[in-house]
Length: 462
Ligand code: SF4
Ligand code: SF4
Image 1 (cartoon, rainbow, N blue to C red):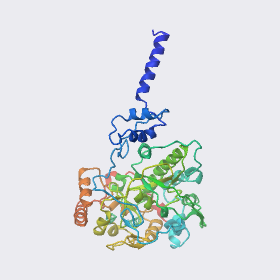
Image 2: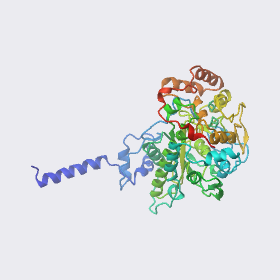
Image 3: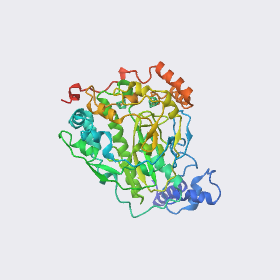
Image 4: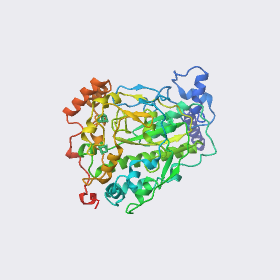
């Protein structure tokens, strides 16, 4: 039996061990400054020692190497695509050319708001407001609605502000946190001011969803005022097997979106609250409470390029088979650069979404045109909204997501080789589109993955 002395010794040994592995903490973020000061930045082999030299308090953080994407994922995962980094300035947001003044938009002009206000006709209005058109969608609506209030997405930062001398280490930490919270992708961007809404809808979209069953819901505008330097974007992939098994506009379509809206909303509100606890401003933006247009945030954060669909951005690995939420913040961070993986050239050649859109909402034009001061394809979100709210063969739609060659159909070398080819200009795009069509990618229905129930009687609006 151990004597008291031995037990004490054991405890002390344990303390010594802990000390060896602990890196300073107030200091984790001071590490970069310390490393730079002693001229070893870029050659950090034993970061814990450097951190020890700089710190006195302890977060047990072992800094990542300079230039790493994050500690959990040292390199960003672009799924094999050939990716170049581009600028975010007055003339360009990523690969989107700015040709005039990009004005802020009001959330009240978004498609579902127009449907609820009756601006797209009676059937879209009634279709959106009818309660219980899909049991699973109703369940998701409840869950997202519960985390959509202003008091959940925003709040006052803690008075106890954490000093952050090394924004690069904090950026890695924030990305790791996103992955830990089950984001499939994350990026950090300089927040484009025009990405903010000028006004939000009142009630919010989820406030309207919660009142489904009412015949008329009046929507007002309330000004939205915020100006933060950075935006963190988190993405969660829509379920691959489900897309493989559906035509894209069955009843499961709306839940494909909702599942990711719910997942990204949870991640964003946790991250925003965490940042506020560190003493910095942070607001989550998610499907139930957006204060900003996500597409511009996605591009600014290096997570996609515009596509033929209009204002949908595609990621090099996920295509646009994903949904995002964001956090705007003044936490000191190092923004990523927007990316160019050849999407604009690809979309000029590929028309697959336009050929397959059941609403005829996606343009067949070869080139983008000016819209609100920037160039984008002239696709018609109103036609899309009318279809999604009033079609009765299912509920909503995501067929363009299903058919796009970039919306990864599988995790394989074959797909990776395909997107590598596809990111190398127009003739490569023609080649990949040909292969995609030849193998029936995107349009096939893989019955073995059909796990969900369909509710045809509920889809009827009248
Ligand atoms: S969601 Fe459906 S209706 Fe809308 S653009 Fe895509 S394919 Fe067309
Ligand atoms: S289906 Fe083709 S044209 Fe449409 S967004 Fe995808 S790559 Fe572009």
